[in-house]
Length: 326
Image (tube, rainbow, N blue to C red; front, side):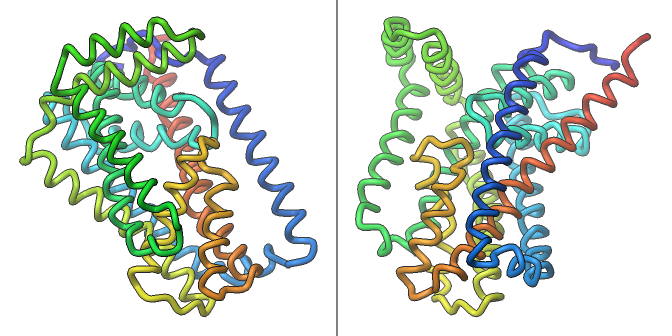
């Protein structure tokens, strides 16, 4: 490749372990689906929803384009725009490959593939943290529509605001970042210390990005992306005859995602679905219908993301192999 291959931040062995986790979690998911399907015929119901699920998948795929437009703008604001739109989009999508696995393998993949385009690892890391922080804010705003379904919603919002304020503080006060690094060095466990430094270093580099001319359009792109995803859920609900007020229909899936994220289960697998079933049940939806909707939306969001990420990763690796000198 013309720009050469930099040091690989995620080894083949680590990629293999992450892929193993994805396969294992997918296998458990399939077994759980088979177990549930024995009495409830969820699979047959999903087959009947093939057309609505296809439409939902298109909405989710469109959300990836909006998210990448934001990612590209944030890289450009740091002086490192990807060299080509399609190649940068593939590198961005590759980060979804290990969504359902523990650790930072997906983000490390992005570091690898954007480094091939001349983007330093620190810039990719900072962009990732900036993106996730805005996503957290946008998803929380959307989730307000379903806030009445969760008694502890206020506590959930307080935790999220504390995280966002913590990131802003680390970005604005270098001394605080130095103190945080010193405290992290005293924590037992190398993986935990590494993760701590990973986050603090990225957060400390956010300061140049905290300006309105970048925050406003980035928030807008994030809003478009997550409204598309929430709309996919609302459309699926309408397709099975669930009648919900539009703020509630748009709020349930974002709120379920927040609950899944706070469970610390990789990809929120299981916990997000359970939250959807509980919230739909609170609105009078039968357990069978709620399960079908929960599993259906996760197939076209979480598992579609994993599939798209794997395909993007394979494409980038094969292209690099073909272009590398023999």
